[in-house]
Image 1 (cartoon, rainbow, N blue to C red):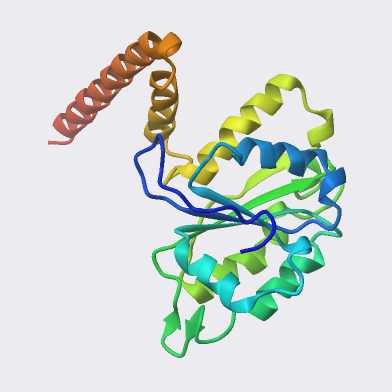
Image 2 (image 1 turned 90 degrees about the vertical axis):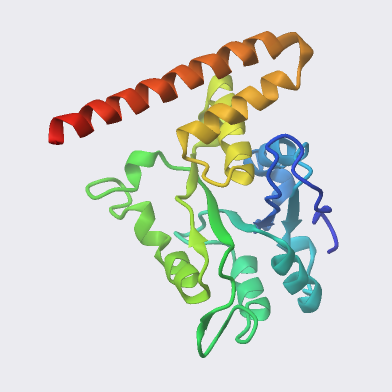
Length: 239
């Protein structure tokens, strides 16, 4: 792959061979603070390949398809322009996601892979709801990707949305960095147990914070025991 595609490595902290291909559609990425932040956030993740479509035209279709086949997770990352993705993503899907490659007469051919969506927009989250300024939910605008995932047998993740990045605080940016890295590397990004282990792994990787990691791990184990006890109590009540 050319440009910013990167090279897939092995999972370096999670212990999971989850290879993620980030497909970025943005016509003027150098001027986008959001995309530059996300690119820097993914730079340390050896199992993540960043691929900017707009600088890889015309597409090398066999190479693009090879990258898709090599990935376990595909992430479409784009700003919402006039309630849709920029043109390069549509062009890439049209030229690369061909019949007999992503689906055939028997169904989807990408089974076992997952599809994520990282979508940024300049209006507040509240605008994208019934009665809001836009008047439609973000889920409604992203419906075509639900159909695409269904057609190709991809497991669709809940989208990671970024609202008004330029207006966010430093703390919000730090939280976004964590959410984004987890979205790219965790099998189930919204699972509390996987999120807790993600923090533990990173703390253990730093000698100065390894004690905190042990304490967090102990607390996580205690929470698991409490969950089990609660489950057993509820089971006893139903007998």
